[in-house]
Structures are given as structure tokens and as C-alpha cells.
Image (cartoon, rainbow, N blue to C red; front, top):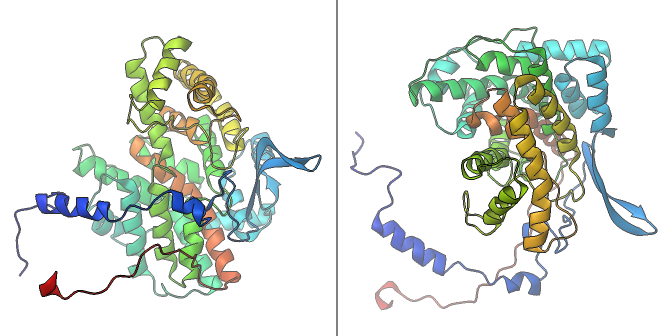
Length: 457
């Protein structure tokens, strides 16, 4: 028999507050010590350059070019297995087709598929796009969560129990697990949202089945909408967004997490759950939600969306921690790698503009474009950053999802639905080139102390 309590898991009692204050007081590290011992905070040099921690053949990010023997910032470029993402997206648009599945194949197997290979791979994805019997009822619907990323992570970890060979880390078995997860992520995301919407928000419950002829983008829209209807433009733009979000070098937080956890020899489900936990953070995949929420606050506090001075004053308040979440950030501006431009944002912006014109969102798009133009000037003036600050892929993705009537709760899960392809490629790459467990060094700054018996303290 379990012991019943009168407190909730969310309660913070006075004793916890007191212990928290003590813990915080005893855990502060002098920031100057990082420079003294040449410790790379966040695995980055003082100039922002990432510390080299591994090798990958999956994707490449270019943000500098060599000019007269010196590295000079340039427009950002992103390559998947050596192919420029601009060329990949351009080819798909030229053929007027869906491309997500094709690019998944490229990331996993290192080469573009032939027409027959692509047909076979799509059939494999459809074959695996199913959940165990009663999984939706017993796992997803039974314990709905208001946080979709946690809901997906729980589902992924539970799928371990339905796998007959969950701990087998042979390449064939891990590839099978990864393809299955890539296939079912749209189901886990949308079904998780419907469970939350029904049980926690008292809305109608919709559980649709995925049609075998649909692309991943079509499956997402079809499962999400009560009437299952969508336009071709909506699906094609979402397909493009998924392609742009599916991979971004080996050094981003969630992909690095995948490498680190995989290097320990753990199972696929645990590795992907760890990557999901990383992506959930507002400094990583959750940034698109922050951008959308920031603009919702801006709309409430700026009366004239065409007044540059009024918008600039609001942006200044953001930096001065006087507006929105008071964190001193203009979300969607700046990137850890790109300085001149984020190539994903450049592609996405054009697609968002076309969708805005088709769906009647030109006023909202114009506001985003105006902020995109003004924010670097405000940041440069307030923070004295004159090297340039460009908008990143998160800047327009929230607007895109809102135009597609995708709820805010699914913004980061959509990111995960795309990025699972990149995580899978990197997990397999780590296993194929398995070396030592990834274990970075930490310098201890503790001083030795003598133990004192309890009755003498």
C-alpha cells in the first residue's frame, strides 16, 4: 500500500527554499577562473569559434572564406553529405515534389537515391509508420502532458519495451530502430497533442490514421486537422521546413548529445530521448516558440506595426529587460555559428512570404520583416556589436507554423520530427566509427578539507 501525502510534486515547501539558498551560495564559481585556466565555456573559444571535438561526414556548415590568407565572414552555407542545401531544395521545388524522404535517405546512406531506391525507401517508411497495438490508448492517451516534448520522450522510452531486441547495437538493428522512429515521430507528436487538447483542455479528440500514399508533411497536416484537409502549397512549404530543420552539423547541442550518449554504448531509445531533452530547451529547439511568443507580446504593445520608431523602442525594451520575458534577448536574432546570414532562414523566408500572400497574412509577414531589418541596428547600438547580427531559422518558423494553423505546443516537436533524421545518421556514424566513450575533462577548483565527525560539527 502506498502512503498518501497532502503535498503535490509541484509544491516548494519552505525547507526546500532554505536548502536551495544554501546550495546556490556554495556552488558559485568565479567567472574569472575560466580565463585563468583557459577553460572553453560552452566548448567555445572567446571569439565564439567552437572547440573541435569530433569528425563527421554528414553535414558541413560554412560561415567563413579564406581571403588573402585571412578568414573573412561570408553568407552562411549548409551542406548535407556534400550537397548544398540550396541546390537540394531548388531541385525539389523545380520538380514540384515532396523531398523530405529523399533527404532522409541521403543523410542515412550518404548518397542521393535513384528513383527506384527512393520508391523502396518510401515503402519502408510506410511499412514502419505504425505503433504497437493499443499503444495510443495505453501510453499516449492514458497520461497526457501539456509538454509535447516530454510526451514524445516518454513514448520513445516506452517503445523500448515493445522492441524484441532493444539493446542490440549492431548496425542493422540500430538502422531498423532509427527508420522506425523516423516513421512514427509524426504520430507521436500529433497524437500527443490531441491527448493534451482533449483531456487537459476539454476539446474534441481526433485520432486519424496515416494514409500510405502521403508524404511526411502531408501526414502531419492530415493527422492534425479535424477535417484532414490541406492545400498543396501548405504541405510543400511544411516539407521544405522539415528539410531545413533535419540536420545542422555535428556540433549543435542535441546532435552532440546523441554522439555523447551513443558513445557510452546505450540503446537507441535512450539516445533519442536524451536528444529530445536537449532540443526541448529554449536555447535550442524551443527558440521558435520564444520568437512566436515575443511577437505576440510585441503585437500587444506596439500600436502601429509600420512605425519603425515605435518598434525600435520596443526592441530596446527587450534588450533592457523591460519587456516580454525580461531576459534581455531579441529571440530569432543571432546564431552561434553564422554571422552574415543563416542559409536556412534565407530559403524559409521566401516560402513564408509566398504562404503569407496566399493565406492572407501579409500584415504579419511585413511586421516580421520590419523587425528583422530593425533588430540588428538596435542590437548594434545598444550592445555595441557592429560585426553584424543576422536572423536565424527560428525567426520565421513560428510564423510559418501559425499560418499552417499548427498549435504552438507542436512547434518544437515538428523540429524533432525533422531532426530525428540527423540524430539517426549521427548515431550510426558514432557506432560505425566507435572509439572511446566521450568524456571531456573538468578542472576541479575544490580545496581539500578535513573530515569532522557528526557530533563535532
